[in-house]
Image (cartoon, rainbow, N blue to C red; front, side, top):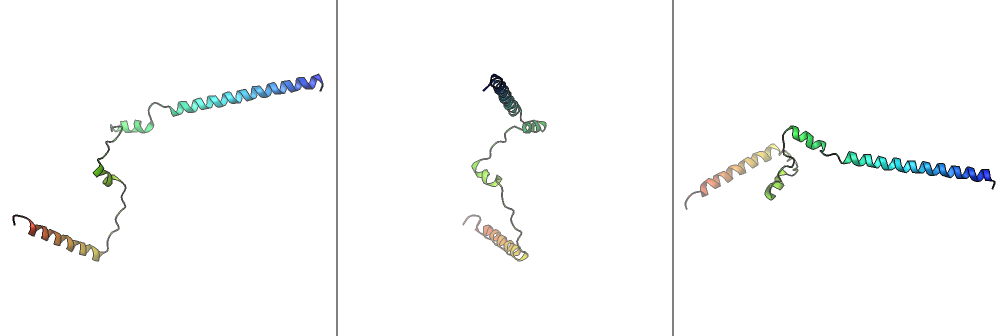
Length: 104
């Protein structure tokens, strides 16, 4: 290899190294910016909540309330006949309760 080609190769490798270094630095700076965005001091949801003067965390319901507060399926409306049957059953229960109350 001639001296010119050696010098040209050295220049190219130096350029490549510079470009690689710049790319790495750019990537690092992007990561830093991303971290800064993630590490915002007050989340937006809390900012919206403060506007309504709500506590940050709602008090957790007791174990007996947890079942009721969970998502429930909507009950399918019964047919007219079934609704009437249920009404009759309720009336019977009511009568039975009234009869068994009091001293025996």
